[in-house]
Length: 403
Image (tube, rainbow, N blue to C red; front, side, top):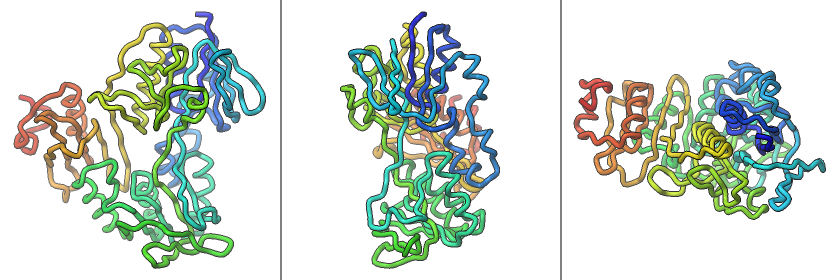
């Protein structure tokens, strides 16, 4: 193994790839390129405990610095890859350095979708994707009174929960007719809508932001022909795959870098993993997943393939969100046509929604319901068919649900 493997992207997938390659016996040169000044770190805590100030920065990092030294991984941080020359098998960096490779892993992740409306560049309008973003936002939280959350998805509601815990006035502007509509079923949306309203959050549905207003800095938001006071705004309207580098290199790209079941791109010497990819899901559809699980597992399978031991990636995807004292855990992928079974009473703040497809469990959404989530993942992986009335019967423990 005298080859050189280069990893573009110093995130969750990149860190996992380093660990997996060395654990699987790769002894060649290993190089990681990252455009932030930090080694790979966790992003999920950014909108929760790190923003709240209850998690120190040091605890964000996935591995200690010594790990990369011991793994003999050359870290090229605070520099971005500019081009990939597939013919010469060279990555050119923005600072002029060129890095040759034998095999390449693209793990460039994703970026925030920016809002396009007047005043979007005013001081006081924030996005949340990196350590630097949160480090800019936290001081603003100290002086703000009115916080606007643009987008009622995971990030927006997590930030809104933190802001309410800090005693700030929070207004959520959601263009669709329910919160987290793209990610969860209506029963879950309804539950979180009520939870946030009960906590004092003002939620405006079917309301898009028309403009950010202010002289020199943000002072108000115009939405629905009205102006609402806002000292700061946090925009969370989705993310986009960082696939431009791959596209310019001539790889097959379309809302993500297309990869086969072994995470290989249209170039036999290049693999990709994480948020930047589009792959065949368990149901056969092309999907792009934005989650830690997918980044970790795709990196593992890409490492195996680069080592000449390819295995098909067919893991059950899972996601989570922490808001107030609630942990939402989701496994599987839901379809609009799924039949839903609610297990437990939402008023108890401990319940689950199962998605059935041809009577088989296809997805589960569990709120403070670890047994339903854990068993649900197993049922999804095995394609287990269960009568709806049995799933709904809380008198039957989840561990006995298939008996």
